[in-house]
Length: 352
Image 1 (cartoon, rainbow, N blue to C red):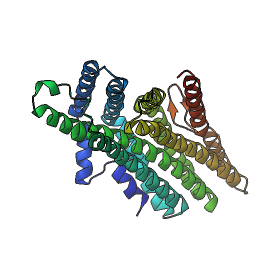
Image 2: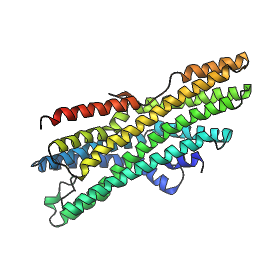
Image 3: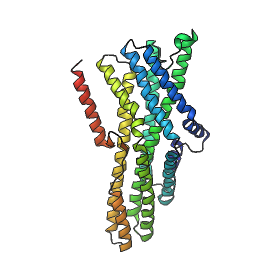
Image 4: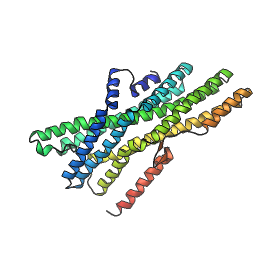
């Protein structure tokens, strides 16, 4: 299967199911629904503030709704879809130019593993919540504050509303946005590797001209993607960081539930994945710079050497995803974030 087919599913192209999801994400009704959920959960937290668990569950879901609302807001912006379609067009051009080669196989393998991981995480979230519901017998409809006023139907309405409406939409929005960002970043890294292979395969005036033009287009799309998500990634990942803090509080207060582990693995899985893809993008740009240098020093003519020098100059400034408060996302940033989290847990652990 071609890489463009993989991406057409992630970027919601053509198929009826994908068109339905596109309308769901871009509808203002979905955004209003998230705002209404946040109000419901704040009211519920005020009504049930007797224990730490009953307070933290609605607060955790408020941050989930905030991230989901941000994902819906991002999906309604034309610039977001323009970036995805430009990346898809570049993939089609590169497939027609190079065909099925190593860069495409590696990119498809990484994207497939990432999609499988995010889908497994979504299934795990639902499984853990339903396990707590059926085994412990506790009430999980924390975003439905009207249960005391609806008589015997209140509990059933709350369960259906929370388990099948609220959780489904929140999880679908957040997981899809993480998948889209990760796949777009991974594909951009793969296109950099494809250009590197294209340069060293046959250095001629024609291939050099094509490589320079494609790199200019790829560079513009990549920088546009990085700039667009720089102001949104912190909001999208708010639920991961805040839920990790909430899970830490639950562990220290000895109020552990099945949702505690879900909150802890969210930051380690989703945040680390984006850091990994951002590191891939930077490394791929530097690899392209190295290949352009090798091509420029292999006895080419002066005009081709000048063109390759422009590629080296641009690729020498590697792009990377940025997040407000964290800076450039890479493996070093992920390690630093986990070291800080461990320091906080160590300090607070001595006080409890």
